[in-house]
Length: 46
View (cartoon, rainbow, N blue to C red):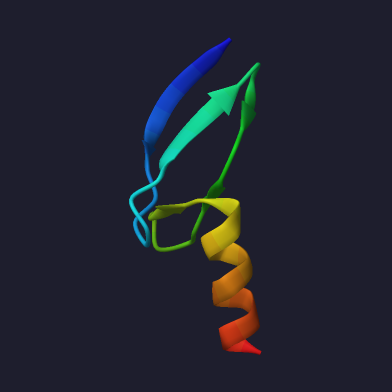
């Protein structure tokens, strides 16, 4: 099953829950980002 959870706060790409697994990252600030943007933020933050 695939449910739309929201959209990435960085790029606007849809973020889904796939068979019970959240296909993105919820930051401490509460924003939702896709895995690609989360990786980029981690690289930029290092």
